[in-house]
Amino acid sequence: MMDNALIFDLTMMMAKILVILACTLGVVPVLVWFERRGAAWMQRRVGPNRVGPFGLLQPLADVIKFMFKETFIPKNANRFYYLMAPIIALIAPLCALAVIPFGSKVIVNGQEVLLQIAQMDTGVIFILAFAGLEVYPVILAGWASRNKYSVLGALRGSSQIVSYEISMGLALLSMLIVYGSFNPHEMVAWQNGTLFGWLPSWGVFVNPFGALVFWIATFAETNRLPFDLPEGESEIVAGYHLEYGGMKFAAFFMAEYVAMIMASGLLVTLYFGGYNMFPGMEVLVNAIGAHFSFGEVGLQNTKAFFEFVSFFTKVAVFMFIMIWVRWTIPRFRFDQLMDLGWKILFPLSLINLVVVTLGVYYFNS
Amino acid sequence: MGTINVSKKFTAKEKAYIPALLVGLKITMKRFIKGFFFRQHDTIMYPEKKRDYSDRFRGMHFISVDKNKTENCTACYLCETICPAECIHIVADEREDENNPYGVKKEKKPVSFDIDALRCCFCGFCEEACPKDAIKLSTNYELAVDSRDQAIYDLDHLKRDMNGRSEKK
Image 1 (tube, each protein chain N blue to C red):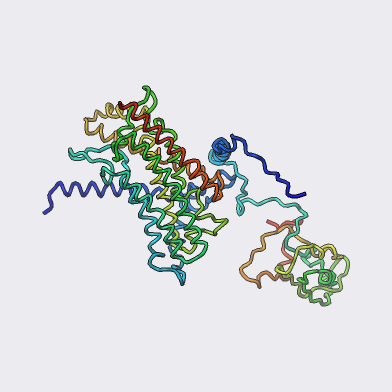
Image 2: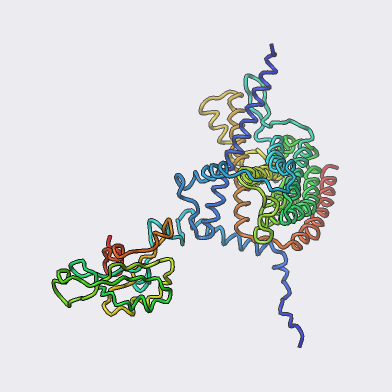
């Protein structure tokens, strides 16, 4: 006989995992659809509009096609690593999502439940570890499929990640100095409030250059245009996932979108107030609470719901910007990419780190 | 002589990249809004809506017929002779008197008149060579078939109902 507290914890944990999984994997088809139709609209085209209303069922049709495709493994490929790469690609960003808080807390049965799957004091380190893991499937896939184009893609991917993770880490470090914590929940709590009485005290307003560097680095981290050199269709066919077909390709494809969601979630948590509500939403929550005469419990749960909505909206905005940028900017040349990473972003983030450190020292003393 | 360097130095604004980036983003956003809210597309929704081609467009052939549905062709072989792709194959025969109740007597008729649409280059020479205005090119451009055999059109198909140069609806 298990005791009730354990059952309660287990149920809540499962519920949270379910919410996050459903939100992430449910949003992916919509994103794929939006990516294709949005691209079409930006290019004066119509895009997929035949399957279902507005073509919304197009991703479903794609999945059915992927499932019925032949399972093909190249003769000289290293089977183990070849098959492992898409799995890691999908799992790494999903794991990182576990630490991103999507609301403050709900009160169920008189017990507080933090809206975050894994409560860790070292949450940001955990995210960084799994975000860094995203380069492994690229290298594994490129190396294991034993194709020269794939290897080229893998090489590009690894050198790109190395050059961008440094500036990303430095930008993150400057934020850690400001927040004084590794815990995402405490970071978001720090951003709850206002600067000068009107500006929400989001990280982006405290540390704009850090936000810019981090934002650019997320593009490179998720291999999105203008940094999609590991894939570079016109140069190296499809890069690291050239030899993958059917569901294995679909896993890479989904992984890209999950990584986008993860990167946007991280960016929102660090720099754009996390689950903090938009200015003015507090009034709405209080009005709803007053209208239905909620007690403290109901009010907190309503607040948590609106916090989730705010977080979701913020992430959605950044996803939209990612898609928008993708269909605007052409791919960088490799030397331009390296220039940007080492000669501009790295010094910028280093100087920014020094300035932020001095600023924090000045304000705290 | 030697190489002339025509590359220009980038200005500070161009080097900063962000302003140029914003210009590009503005353009795509404009297009996005036009496409999303106002449904402005350059795409023609093809099977439902078809592009208007000129009447001079050279599509699939047809053979004109008189009121009696008798083909105007007299199997003179001029089209077969001039055809650069050698895609027309005619077998001629004598035409019975009862098939010629009125008008100019046509003494010959094609027993079979095959056009291999896969060989045809749609040059229109057959139309120009024909003394009877019998073979003409319609504006029909939808010539997809399931097998090669289906792309060889016989006399019955070529005598299909036409309205001017377009297929009768």
